[in-house]
Length: 512
Image (cartoon, rainbow, N blue to C red; front, side):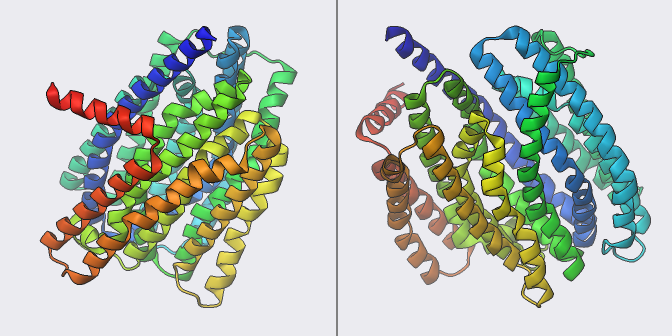
């Protein structure tokens, strides 16, 4: 019993330490990312930015194969670490690396054949920018090729919970991207081609750092020609079923992006690209928290510690939603002013797209811990057959509605609804797989989250409608929204013992 308590305490300390590293990374990357997005839009213009997003999206349509394998790689590496089987860990890494190299070659061939035809004949590219778009496409292929081959190294860092290295390398990544912005502003060459070329060079640099670090620190991270049929079959079977879900998500994101390009114009793609960047910056707070916890979900399941797993899932889901709500709530109220301050010229639909994507992210950040639990169980055939059809409907339904003349925001509404349905299916599966309690989920997650939203919403919303759109009013409304949301979380989402710990910690900091 004492050993279990000690282990749990060590796990909590590791999660807290890793979360701090990731938040340090996030604060820096978010600030630089928002700044660079503004400059890139200013330098490239809405049409070129939209062209970059939609042409790169064609490659992303192929790279969903990589997403499927990446999830499997991280799951299997973490699982073997949880079982402390280091021989199997080494074999798993070698097998994963071989599969990723083969996949990179396959995607390269598909991109240079089917993908090239699609870009040349189906994408809506502004007149005179065809040559630049082709250069962007080729650099995107090379960037994707390099990214795929470094996935096992990245997964090893996460599995070993070395979040400090993950944070440092990510900071290096954004510093290099900041350098891209400077070079882009002074370059006399075609701006769009220059941006794609520099982005490729950054990808190569970051991948090299991951490779060197993993080879130095982790004995299992070595290339080899190992073959064991059962291991390769397990990896490919898991990833093969995971492929369905990743393909559905890709259709709901990049597929819809291509539909927007076909039915509207590159400026609408630019609005979506900017909305995605805002959401990425905000949801980074939650993603960092969850990235630090996800390995523990897999390790608890591998160690058959179901009560600890249930508790971690509920806390992760509740706190993830609350963190996202505190950050997203002010944006819901005053997003137009934020965009005017951030960007020199705001493309149409940007604010509406932002709100819908943020709303979908609120659902997903509460859902993601349970998705990770489903992956930890490993019954991917049942999981994907149950959830994927819901996501697969997003792309055809979006096409039908847009073909009938509905506005550009309809696909985003469809995605929100599909995310909610998928969440309910996952809870049902986990009830059977790990004896997850609906009652505890409702009492521990849904009820406190509902009251947090209900109590934090009225006063800032009323004030937002009464005051004008000046920057002073913006600061007043956003400050009230954040304070209201934080107080609601403190009193309604945290239990008495946790509130006491937080209060004591704040008092200690003030005294010091």
